[in-house]
Length: 426
Image 1 (cartoon, rainbow, N blue to C red):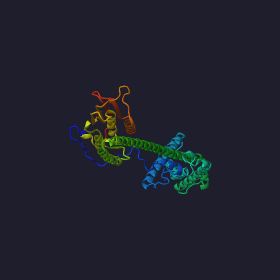
Image 2: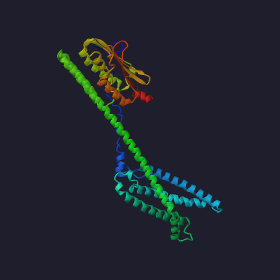
Image 3: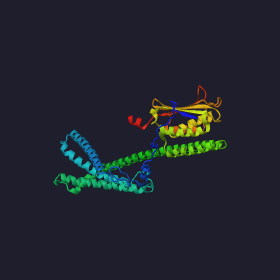
Image 4: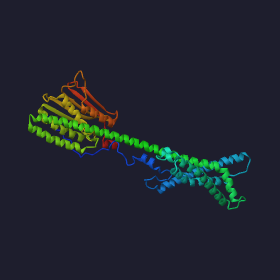
């Protein structure tokens, strides 16, 4: 068998060390975030650090405080404008300078209490569905939150009373205790609503984060499953290729022991090359061509000069990324089904060239072709290759088996054309 390139000389692509491509679904260290959230009930929301995470940075805490007090300022100003407009409509004399400071104190005090409200939400979650194992403590948590509502309202009113006395310089005709009870009676409902709103916001953010983490984990598990399926398909392909080659060697042992021994040595080299790319789904085309040539060297010992293999490889695509063991099954299919008896002389041409944004690979032979009645059947190698391509590229590939107009068969494969250099240029 003769092996030649497009120019008639032996095609010897430059060999490079195999470089693994990034796997389809490398599982990150935070793949179990959802479980961690459900088990610990700890969250780094509003500056509160989740268990197992590094402390929240000072910059992050400062940003949170700035946002919190900015919101409090906006609320205070808007509420002051509302009170001002209402009193003016009633004909009362009032100025914004009197209303704004009081409202700022009211909202700023709640801003100071917000981290404590969030801590209560984390410590006693009322939405048990967010926390695995908290269902049996639901009643305890609800009671704790009811006590917290009253406690926070009393604390907020007490702080507001003290702040009001300080702003007034202590000059007030109303005793402090009476002022406190008056504020408490007037604002109890409003303060309770504020507490519940802050608690609801916290739980909403927790739910949002848990949902995102679960979606992330689901996508990672899906990618990991696809990676495992690809590996299984490849593991199926390697024994298939190995058994076919061993069968060829076994048949040759009865005819030419020396040639069979040479095939065993060549097979050992080929298997060593295959082991170097274990766990790798894509390699450079030059490496795939190198592997194919080693396989063809084994086949040359079987067919001798009765078969000619021509490799027509466009040199500009040698850096293209292709699935491992993608060309060998196509060539093996041509040899087994086109010249399976080993007696027929013929030719096989392998062509690889760019086709727009696709990389087209064709294997054409002048062998027996496909049966007219049965059509183009697919063996293990072709069907396995099709399944791997579907996992790697979805529907963005084509693999066609057809009769060659000049006799024989043609297998045409098109996959997305990408390389490290091409990706960087894009």
